[in-house]
Amino acid sequence: MADSGEPKPHLLLIPYPLQGHIIPAAHLAVKLAAAGFSITFVNTESVHHQTSLAHHQLPSSGDPFSGARDSGRLDIRYELVSDGLPVSFDRSVHHDEFMQHILHRLSSNVEALARRLLPISGLVADTFFVWPATLARSLAVPYVSFWTEPALVFSLYYHMDLLRLNGHFAAGDNRKDMITYVPGVPAIEPSDLTSYLQESDTSSVVHQIILKAFEEAHRADYILCNTVQELEPSTIAAMRKEKPFYAIGPIFPAGFTRSTVETSLWAESDCSHWLNSRPAASVLYISFGSYAHVEKGDLAEIAGGVAESKVSFLWVLRPDVVSSNDTDPLPEGFREETAGRGIVVPWCCQIEVLSHAAIGGFLTHCGWNSILESVWSGVPMICFPLLTDQFTNRKLVVGDWGMGIDLGGGKSQPAVRREEVAAKIDELMRGEDGRRAREGVSRVRGKLEAAVAGGGSSARNFERFVEDLKFCVL
Ligand code: UDP
Image (cartoon, rainbow, N blue to C red; front, side, top):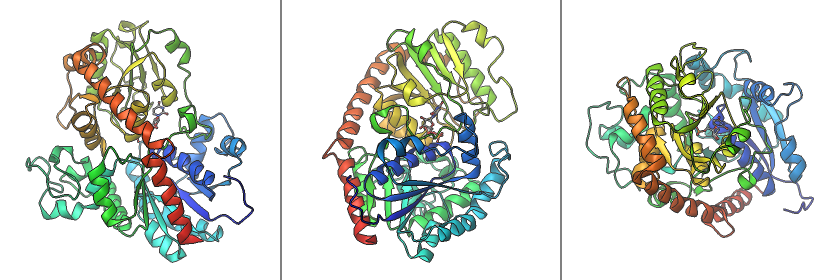
């Protein structure tokens, strides 16, 4: 957009301090800046420290937007806020304490920062925060709630009171009957709800966060969702009756290439050399995302299945993927048994890996970003959900859109057996179900591409949102 010299409306944009939220928020920042907003993007000091180190910079110098700003002359400022814990605090090991600070300590620090940065025209904040509507009201600006998961998951949380009323909230395994009363959601099994809606113990800090965050979401002025209208038409139509709800996904870096914004929390291993040596569609990519932990027993079964399948693989094993302090959580002998046909790395540039011609399948925990990236790359999935929205996302991938194979997963231990893992890998990479899933991905990919192309639904929804917000704030 040409710079008219007019003052631009200033939006404060605050991602949830977790990898799967920071990545789409950074790309939203670039989109909003390109649409004529002045953006202040706020990371926590801890996220800033970690990303700086991952990108081999000194934390004092790293501004993750410097590349994006230079290439597009975008008006994006970068600020930091403390989450109340020392930067060196291990947030993965002491997760509950981390979440307690997000729940109780972050808001006053954000408010102090917001008041220092006035004037502000609007607050764009992750839906999982427990304070944005309240803060936006006190600043007399609109609250734009940014939802990084499917509309279906938003709708289920938004209608938590209905689930409670009907006895499906926190019902554990006690309810097996279909849920048919959530507006816009034709029918959903209780086991497809997010883990936090299923669990009977609701005393966790994450439950407190979700309850409060959705009270705030009920007071949001606008909701932006990283999904596509054509994929979830009835859910989105029902949400639009409640709120100005805009499906603007998928929000990827321009051209789906390595992002010019430095968002990675871990250093990325370069896998391209190894992938280049592999035949087309022959490699299984395995990753459980940035947040969830895998039980050691499950990891052993999955490794056993991978070894038995004889498939080539690229496996991302985060250092903290198994909760215990294991230096190498893979079973003894695995590396020797699979030597020459697989590599294990701590972290990679996932979009680069998924879009490589050598990748033929993705064994995924079903994080929403991973699903969108897999579809965009034309890669079918084996679904092994672990936590939170991943169970609901699996229903969409396997049941609704026919893009993958279910590998079970659940509460009993081990959740999977190596024979089943091997058989499903074989099916995905070489079998009839895999062929069908590849067709399903290709169908859905067409919808994603059409949505973001000029005149497509996501492009139009984003334009409409920009007009609506500018009308409100100018
Ligand atoms: N990711 C990455 N490198 C990896 C693993 C994951 O860049 O080695 C990125 C991935 O591309 C995605 C994000 O981390 O954008 C993970 O988000 P997702 O919603 O899939 O899962 P979460 O981490 O939130 O559970």
